Length: 403
Image 1 (cartoon, rainbow, N blue to C red):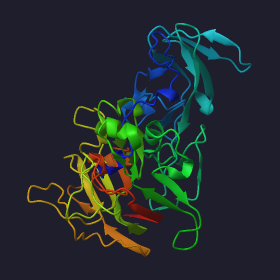
Image 2 (tube, rainbow, N blue to C red):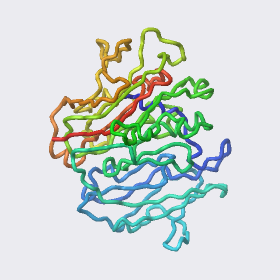
Image 3 (cartoon, rainbow, N blue to C red):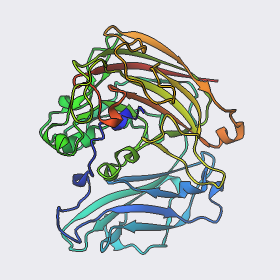
Image 4 (cartoon, rainbow, N blue to C red):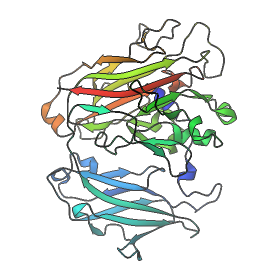
């Protein structure tokens, strides 16, 4: 990506978001996956696989999205929970009863159910909610700023809302991973932070900064974290074993993007370093900004979700718009001391055309068969843990124009 987004993903399972007590067996109490069982799923959902959700360790609210004109009622539900744990469902008065997998629950009218998972040793527990909501068709053209932000539940880092834009309405970034790397960091020391009143029009904007990950980062050979922002999923539990796979990009989209506009300014860090933290002579750090449209289902109906390995190279990509960079003859990224992206320390509005590689199928588009990615990073090689510590990318007033 900017795989760079992945960068901040400072690789490490976010154990404090789950209820796992370190080095002790049989203390886990997580929901790992949920399945709704329907005879004909596509009557209600866009794809058969929409009836199954993997629940990542940072999530407590499990939400299924159905077509806007449908309604779901009694449906059998199956949960996969951590080994040895017990699942309880709460009634409207908070009274808990044991939940048996395969039992039917009434999910009509966007009713919310509450569950509690108790670990095998009965010491730990975790609460979840489950609901089904109706899809709200997007307006097509998108205008996004970064004025809706707040601290996470731990008070350590910032989260940004993008209501009515993405499936879950929330931007993703590497702040949760950085929390593991530098637990003592203050909220404004994280790679992705708000910049109050610093936008081109005097409003709040977003600041992404490439940060040193400290002693832990050096220990695991991940010495920096690029500031990042994107839509999709960050599965922190994969971060140590497969950092690129941990970041899954994109949200279903029903319009054909043709142009991407955004206000940017950039301050490169003092020196570019490789993964070993060594100075790379003759290379200046560069930011990244891009929009991607890709096919999210294969010929057999299996779900496709791009990740850090192929977010800008997958054969499933049908359209791409990106800040310009130099590339080698084989298409790989070329590091340079004279970047051509054009982003400077003065605010500028950039217009990036979206170039198509394949024809769009209108019926597939209408049925959410394509996913949209919007992504940014303060170091375009951050996915490889390369860049310049101190590089800062400021972003505001995103506009996506659709046909």
